Amino acid sequence: MKGQPILKRLTFALNGIGLAFRREPSLRFHILAAFAVVLVLLLTQASAIWWAIGAVTVGLVIMAELCNAAIETLADHLHPQQHPEIGAVKDIAAGAVLIASIAAVFVAVAFILQ
Image (tube, rainbow, N blue to C red; front, top):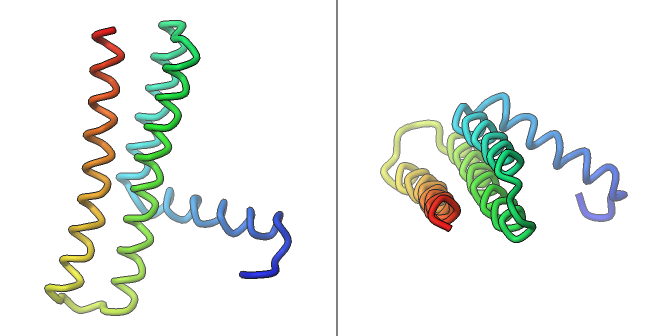
């Protein structure tokens, strides 16, 4: 991929997001949640700082979900059989998504309590 024009690299990235969206129900759920965040911010006329915090938080969760999907896809391809270490890799990646999601819940609670 090195040396490719920026538009071609952007196409690769968008294709990856599209693949993950089609393959991963969890990513679709998190994207739906992101739309809910935007709706709440619009309805409450939130300040710019809350928009920024929301964008970073949503981006973190979506990024974690995409990384998890990439790791799972690669692990399944390299070692399709059940293996404890492959299971550990997948569990750790899923843990990253969980941590990002918990952080998002804390942000939501802070927004509600402000």
